[in-house]
Image (cartoon, rainbow, N blue to C red; front, side):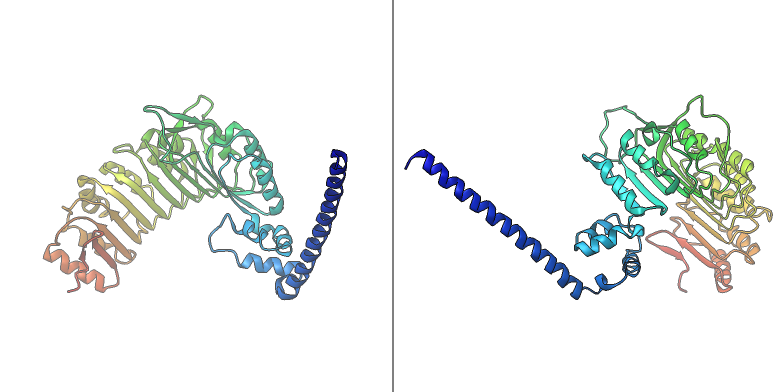
Length: 409
């Protein structure tokens, strides 16, 4: 048999194979159609109107935002895919770490599914301009924005500092529905202050602001004070007092109700007192970590006539003494106090003064928790605390491993 004859037979067989492939492809398609029909018969979801099926999907969402719910529903069947893609509420929370090829396209698709619903965006890592621009095209729908520049496990050279431009240096359009903003950095990470302050100015309806593990680089343009007229909750956890000064010195929050402050510094109370005087907020809850200066406590608490819940951590010995022997003895200091929590206090507390202070405030104060390493409480103080406890005041004294009051006697 010649080579030409062999090639002819190969061509015939190849044609037969292609024909069989087409037959197989049609059979697979027919099977897929029949499977869809079978699913429609078996699956009650597919027999429901789209609006009802979408509502069922939404009610099956986990209690906390889950970045995988929407994508999981896409992989069940074609009918569920269509329902999921037509249910914007499944796509309003977005978690991502940029870097994968084609990520901007995927992100754009996600935003498309979300429609005009408010968006919760959680981004970790460094944002390049393409990803940032994709996000900011939907800035008028951003309701919550969380940006994390790195993790504590990131490796840096010794003394190396990473200067980060917020949102990749791209200035957004106004964010009219942004309610919550969180910016989290890592050790050796610094943010330029001007873009951050610009972001605040573009967010007139911001109600929550969280800043954690970051340091700011001051710039000449970062001047003036911006009034956050709707801010209700502020949490600042910054490595050093200079960062605290940068934030508290540049904003005012006349409606602030809850303040969490970490890293104020050993003796640096000026940023906070200036902020409170400038804002005059109706503060309800105050939480401060690292309290070492009695004057700090006195000045801060004198500016909080509406505060009902106070929590201090890392007390100095003098602060603990003055808090109960001078500060809280003044009836004008924290007149609406209902809950007091003092954590990591020294062991030598002014036991003779504590019952009198609490008794004078028993009409309002409901809960007192003092965390310390004291071994025992003097008998007179113990009896007075028992009387207050019997009168309805919740009192707990001790530490995480041992409680010395109530003593169950």
